[in-house]
Length: 503
Image 1 (cartoon, rainbow, N blue to C red):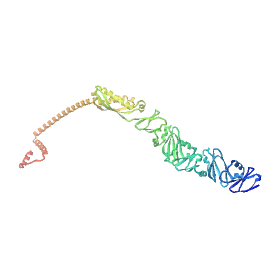
Image 2 (cartoon, helix red, strand yellow; image 1 turned 45 degrees about the horizontal axis):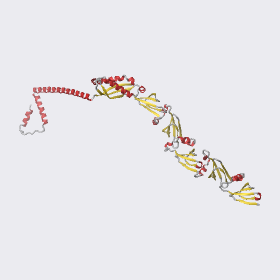
Image 3 (tube, rainbow, N blue to C red; image 1 turned 30 degrees about the horizontal axis):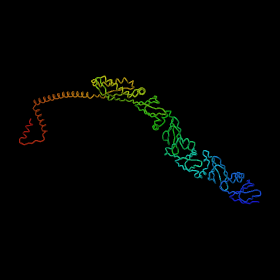
Image 4 (cartoon, rainbow, N blue to C red; image 1 turned 135 degrees about the vertical axis):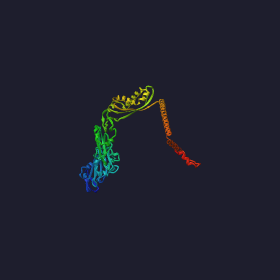
């Protein structure tokens, strides 16, 4: 018996004889003589995968079938993106899949999930057609940059704009600011080591490696910004340009090429600043060893693990006050003395090496010399020779100049303060002396006054006109004391007045 059948356009037939596949039948009319063991199986052409792996293996021997289908085989550690007419349709796990390629074009992108960046093999158009939850869309601003990770391992840097993150391949992302507001856009050293394998990242940053014994001066758009210590540093070169200058701290002379305002800004634990004035002697020590005396000016030294220290001595004439010294004279009178002397440092290096706390040593030397001098004198001798005592003390001090490495220039006694009882006695004696002097002066003046009166009396006795003038002088003085005169007997008034002034 012969079976006649028609296969439609949306169908395909499969001819079998005695259970074995013969060929694929295309749309149209076909005869299948059953008496010869032929049989036809009709399949609908749709978007679903063809099943039965055994039959698919048999169909694979037919060229028409192979031209009409799309086949993909996905192994272990792989996934495949199934695309229909160029657009993403589904994700296929491990297995063998066959689709009809007649009305729609089926294609596949096989991804090795163990690769570092399998998403790099996906065309941009396909990637954009994959929607959530398979892919996440992130928008990166101009002031931002993104970093793509796979299984928490860095893959590459993402630039501004729309970026697709394939979540189905265990990708994730991180977005960071690159604007200057973000703490000058400095990059963490650990992240820097991780991101540095991306060329786009390296082109977007300014990077510097600072080794032991070095620092780096950081400049932003040519302006000094700060100092960088040992380590690897990077800054985003997106909106501003970051440049660096490596400084070798093992050579102090390198500081001479750095502008003073930069040196002044450096932290004290990096750079030691020593200022020497014209009137000073500055002795430089490195690790406790004397190096040299510094000339006038400002000097800079890299610490670089060294102990940088210095001692400054004032080379000008200096005054030393020894005040409130209570000294007992040889006759047991307690005096309080204020003494002053002036000196100048002669050898600053020797003072620093051989004299500990030279100010205290000088004070003690002056104090002992003064006490030794006054302690061997009587009270009266101290009062009589107070002007000589200073020169004697100065002589004693000059004998110790080579020992103290100074030059004593002058000395003087400022005050000698007496005890209360002695002071009262001295004041009594002084008052008595002054009173005696006052009495002598008074007697002398009385004698002079009497002698003057006697001479005046002799002159008036010998000269009547002079006597009359003296009389008129006293009359004038009396009139000056009279405010008003009351006259009762007017007659004879003019005569009376005339007789008073008649010579």
